[in-house]
Length: 273
Image 1 (cartoon, rainbow, N blue to C red):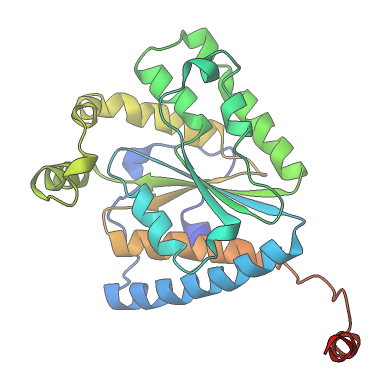
Image 2 (image 1 turned 90 degrees about the vertical axis):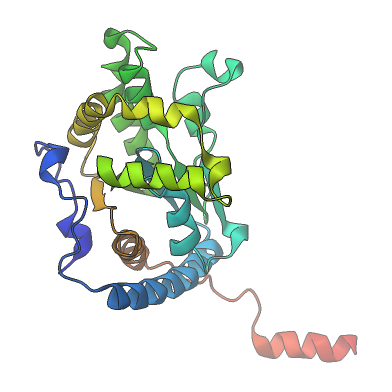
C-alpha cells in the first residue's frame, strides 16, 4: 500500500479528525517499520545531496500538531542522514513586535527554502488560523479570510519551484497526556515542560475543530495535507519518511553536468605539479 495516499487528505473532502485513528499501524510490526525507516532515511540523504547539487528546486516540509505530537523527533529521525548544509529547520513561536507590525505571512515568507534546500517548518503559517482562533487573539472576520490567503501563498511557492509536504501529526488526547506527564518525571525531558501545554489541553475540542477546518480548507492540488497516525512513534516515523522519500524520488533531482572533463582536469593538475 502507498502510505502517502492512504493518509492523504483529498482536496475538497470533508474532515473530522475523530474519524482518523491516531493508533493506526496498517498491521505493520515495529521491526519492519524501523528497518524501512532507516532505508528511507538513507535514500533521503542521497536525494537531498542531488537536490542541493541541482540547485533549481526546493522542498518545504510543514509539521503541525498538538504539543508533544513529535515534531522535533520527526526531524531528528527522518532527516538523520542529510547534509546540514542544505537543510534548515525553523520553529515559529509567538510573533515578535516587529513581526506583528507586518502582515501575518511576512515572517513565513522570509523563511521559505532557497533553491537546492530543504526547509522544515516546526509549526507554520497555520498557527494564524489555529492559535489565534482558539485563543481569540484576532476577530473571526480576520482569521476566517486567512485560509484563502494561505492557499494563494502556497500556490505561489509551488509555481516558483518549491514542493510542499504538509504533515498533521495526529496524536490522541490520552497519548498526549502520557507524553506530557513523562516530561515532568524525566530529567532529560523536563526542560520542555511549559504550564501552557496543560492549559492548551483544556481546549482540546476547540483545537480539533480548528484543525478540521485547516485540513479541509487548505488541502489543495498544489499542497495537500497528510494526516499521519502518531500514537505509535515508530509508525509515525516510517510513514513520514516514506512520504518524504517518495516526494524526492518524484522530483528526481539530477546532478549538474561536469564543468570540466576529467582528462582536462588531470592535464591541469599535471601542469601545476
